[in-house]
Length: 198
Image (cartoon, rainbow, N blue to C red):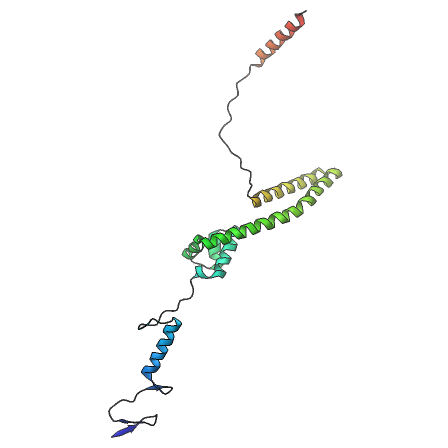
C-alpha cells in the first residue's frame, strides 16, 4: 500500500513523509541555515546559536565622546551617570580607558584655547571701562569695573592653569620687643654728643 505525499511522490505506507523546504529536505535546509549563521558569526559551529549582544557601552564611540565632553567641562562623574543613564562600572571603565583620557585632554585644551581667545576680546573694553569710570569720577562704577577685571584675571588664570597659590607656613616669627623709652634715651644722648662736639 502506498500513499501519495503533497509533493506528488509516492512513499510506502508506515514511513513518515520527508518534510521539505523550497524543494529541499528539512535537514538540508537546516544545515544551510546553520552554515549561513556560522558564516555571519551569529552561530557557533555545531552548537547553539550565539547570543547577539549589543555593543558594550565603552565600545560605543558616541557614548565615549559624550562622557569625554562632559568630563572635560568639569562635570562630576555622579552627574554624568545620571545624565547618560550609565551604570557605575561602565562609567569607571570608560573614564579609565586611555582613549577617553586622550579625548578629555584634547577637549580641555580646546576649551582652554576658546576661553583665552574670548577673554582676550573682553580685556581691552574692560580696561577702557575702568578708565572711563576714573575720568567720570564715579567711585562706585570704578569699584565695579575693578571687580570685573579681577574676575577676568581669575578666569584667565584658571583657563591657563596658572592659579596663584598662597602658601601658609605657620605663624610669623615673633618680633623682638623694642623698649621705646630706652630708644628715645639713646637718641637724646647721641644728639647731645653731636651738639657738644666742636
